[in-house]
Length: 231
Image 1: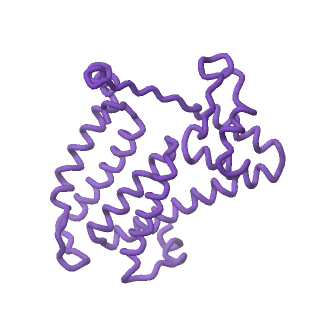
Image 2: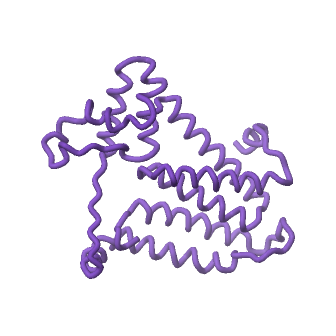
């Protein structure tokens, strides 16, 4: 991670580590809700703080380490993507073309074409004036552009429901295997807000979320009443 110096990964992983540390602290002295199984909880109490320290170092000193270490490995990571404001400007121009575009967006995998049509004037005066970007600032912002308000709000609703469901289950007590599945899904969700993750990563997110819901729903049934009770 330090070699590629991607702050988004450090931040998302750091937030996840904080949540895991809080979970491990809360779980101390609480009887297990499932039959005894090989548990990674002791390792979690040690590994999560260590990874959190690495994330903090990466956020504040990653650039310095990268400048010194990367040349020895022959690694040069140069990444360009639209800024948050540029993505919002393209999305706004898409919505202004008509109510249908605002509701359903420009269509799947069309951000690159929309970028060429509506990119800000400042971009044409930069070295990236010929660059064709297939995604916007992040996965979430790209979905609002290509999927419209319907696609963007639906994606946010699904993520929110998963988190609400997970926090209720964690409060009741879940197995460590279920926790690991949700941790992976939560990491990808956090990353999707600040980085354009690949379609393979989105499929992995769906698989992890499905595995978590399947494991934790085997004993009790989840309903919308539970969500209402949580809120």
